[in-house]
Image 1: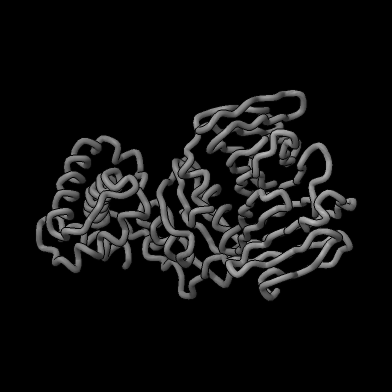
Image 2: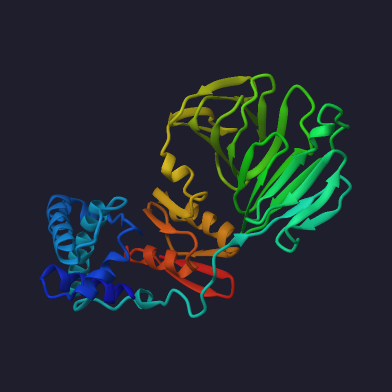
Length: 379
């Protein structure tokens, strides 16, 4: 559905002329992008909220199966504002030249989403493609058996008979490319979800006083509890120490800040000589310029990638496209003045890239073209 088709259908629905099938088509967008609009729309908020409530009531009464979902009312209010803005724009176009950029198609050839793929680099330099490897035992390292499970997860299994007589561990690195993600179970039972363009270096067995791993990129950890042996994640120039908890760390080199988000338990984060304790629902951001900063976290947004979604709140287009570049394995160009534009919303990350871009285009403030694996963002 094009933006123009969507707006016409929405107008049709508001005046009560949409069929039940057309109403269902509108519902396909309800869990996608809440559209943050130009400043000109801000004065319309009260009217938009009333319109949104009316539309929500109509959708509920007519379709019989609608259940309100993420920011639905805000999304409906934003959509109502779009109609008013577009109506004004159509009026103005009769007195001004047509903007040739407004009808640029998102794509002639679409780009598919990422998938479950990674490589495992052993201590001796051997590289194993995990997406090509058959299920079952991949390799053995002393007392450790490395297995690829039926669900695609990588698992390190310590031999029970040899657990008390561990050899010096070797170090392995699991790496996801752009357009890849992977899950693994470390030798202590800790579960790790690794996001795209990320790597985790870890020992084949934890034998020292601490359980140390090194991260680049992003990972979600469910750390196996062990009060006698802290689990430590090192990233950039920082370190997180936990005894057993759930948290997310995002530490990409091309982001201005790294962040750690805590879901349960507590963690200690250290940068240089500064230490802070994080409680559930809090997020720490760190950078060389600003040091450590603690704030309330948006948990749903922080772990959306793990749960199969993109969720953005008040983000500039450059930040959104960095995320898209990692997941869809694309290069991004920019044309025009794209500063001071913020976007927000939610959409499945397993849709083709056109799903993301078309929803961004619904704001009417930005456009895209695709050539091969290069996406151009146009004001």
